[in-house]
Length: 148
Image (tube, rainbow, N blue to C red):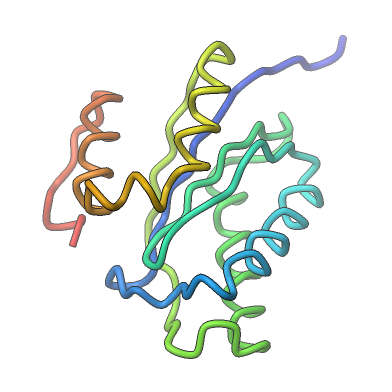
């Protein structure tokens, strides 16, 4: 028997200490690089976007790929690429953790639009406020000391 899944993830992680180091000029290069990592994991990228201090990835994971390993692959490889290419000169790394949220496929189009419009969205809401809102929306308990 084959394995069938349809799990839509929104993955969010930020730069170390939420430093605003992901300057706009280099983001498209970073997004293309991460897109390749996702493809190499036999997964499907629906949308990636972010601002100076964090990224959002909307993806479907291949059933053989564990979410924690997937995020680790993205962070390790992208950190190396950023440093090797000096893409973001003040980038010191990614935060230790990440947030992962699941959605029904009915929510896909709205989720893609939400991620697509990150720059506009963050004119009204800080990254920390956004993350708290997502955690509450998904009924995830959290300790605010880890949101700094």
